[in-house]
Amino acid sequence: MYCSALFSHYAEEKDLLDMARKLKRKKKPVGPIVWLARKLRGWLRVILKFSLGLIFICILVVAVFRIINPPITYYIASEWIRIGEMKRDWTPIEDFQPYVARAIVAAEDANFCQHSGFDYAAIKLALNGKGRLRGASTISQQTAKNVFLWQGRTWVRKGLEVGFTVLIELLWPKQRIVEIYLNVAEFDEGVFGVAAAGRHYFGVEPDKITRMQAARLAAVLPNPKNRSASRPKKGILQRADQILSGAETIAADGRAECFSRG
Image (cartoon, rainbow, N blue to C red; front, side, top):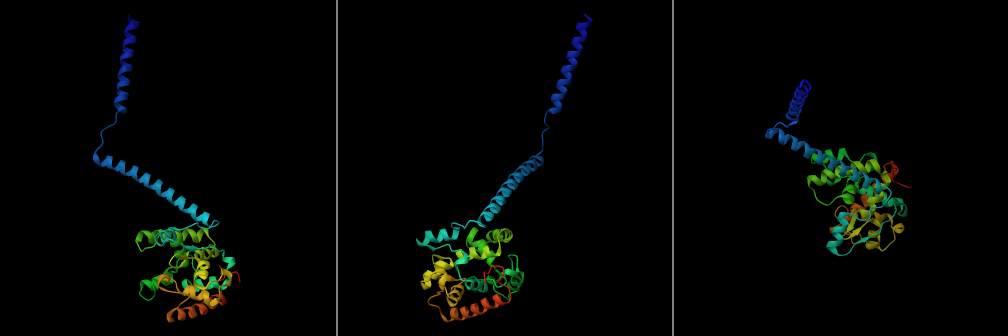
């Protein structure tokens, strides 16, 4: 009898303890502010993971293009679809005469070897109204835009351009940046790259482009659809002469050493 009572008392205490544990584990109701805060934390974690994934993909693609030539770009593809044809022939920088790259750099970004992607002096002048906004855009920035992005002047595209510019300056040698720019820059409607432009305007192979022809090609930038290298107007001829002089200057003062072969 005594043992039965003791066992019964023990069983009742165990049931009470189990009930207390269940009550303790039972979630307390939360208010709307706490619920919203938890939801926001969850969304932020998802956004963070997605953003980190995109950054990783961008870094990987930029790293791959250090070795592999970009097969096509968004802008080239869109122009191909719009026009129905496209002229482009990827050509290594070694296949051009050294003065070709110097002409393009002298025309677009004479201080290319001296900056890390952004010409802060030119940006300052442009913001103060003392320089061209185009002049503040470096070859690194133009390469980032032409290879990875689309045309336009939205803040979103500009922000992405800054990010890609930083990546290519970190992951590509200067000569590689110039090489890719020589092959993706537009020189007429549907004509991309210096090699295709040489054939299109002058009927010459890449290694036969003369100094003056290289200067005229550089002179049609940044508005190739409204300018012609083979039928240049007076302004283009004057600009070509300036580019010839500028190319010789950067060769003499060392501002072409980071990409030149000789």
